[in-house]
Length: 536
Image (cartoon, rainbow, N blue to C red; front, side):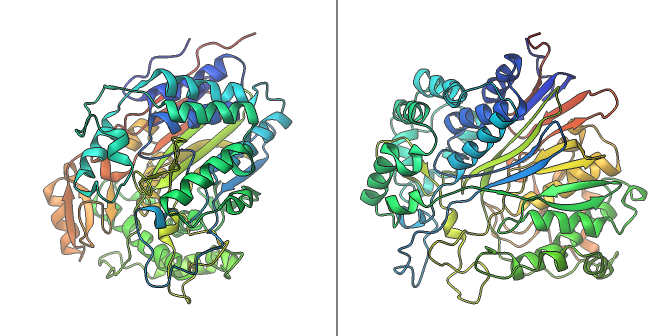
């Protein structure tokens, strides 16, 4: 049995999963109920999301995991597909959509393989095929279309011509389907069944790889079967930043995990809890810390196999202190910035033994490249569209290079054990959203649901607004907006609980009682669900 999600929050001492889709969350919780561990639960949840949240994630995308096992060992998995070897044709433009935007391989499946192998070494009991079974059943038997999927189909309806395979596959006779309408994905069910039988590497160097490469080539992608075969997720040492007596964990470049750590390292220089949460001073400080970190991000962060990323310098106490001193408490810094869009899903899981997982999976833009790989049901991502054609840029396109990634799931450790598991959807908004929810949970001791539901900000452009403004949800109140404007912020207003503000999730673990308190953003379709009973 599982606890019923109450206002997208849940409590348990036996295990918990949170994700942006209730059915996917339930798939992971059932794994815990059957004696599986948090890693297995996170894998099953993610695979279910690959079916039920096609606009944000899938087999044809990338994925990142932070795994803390019951012994306190923390490992990061970076599942980033690399650029095709044949990139010579990209001389003047990299399209944002269409087959030529599908120019990097997909690392998500290999990232899940690495996670499953770690789980097996830790005594995991679930086979690879067992973890795929719930996703196969959802694809074969159908699931209810979510509010989020309907929203993003409607949002992109005017761009249907750029999303070649999306509206023919996901509309209902050319119309935007209603929320709750049943959708089956038999082609994806066959692909998942093949992966269950042949194993995860079949996606890269087996029968499925041949089908994918053939479908991508017919569509006009530069990717080949050799490119797929060369794809390998990496198990890496995490980056760490001290904050309020604990340590924040993030991924290494080419992700912007370092950017989130920089923001929090800058905020560590301030007595945040002495500032009223939700005040103009609070939002101003967070926004200015974001600006300081983003300047470094856009100057330095790329694939460290190809460019020098001065990680130690960027996270050094002296550099972070200088960044903090550069913040004017009364005046906004001017903000010329290039916006990076993207959509993602966050999955968090923890179990009674102490294993915990923070995971993000993505196809970059909502609906990715808009291209399906033949008849496999696999929608390919467009992460390669984030490359630059400026040879001096740290994210310059090169054969075999990994692109800059906005994804950065996180954990907050105290005493070497996870206290908070967190992550969010939202591209450029990810570090901004994380700064808000982390200060609320750590500095102001808010429970996760309250921290996630409070008004948030987004600096820069959004999908629907190209103005370089500081956007705040309108429930902060007009006086606060006016005060920020007087401080020099160029303000924009969005509706309360806007889906443009990202979809974070979090699980907080009490170190004494072992109680787990979890939530997923009320702006999403998601829930956290806690386990009531497990075998034995």
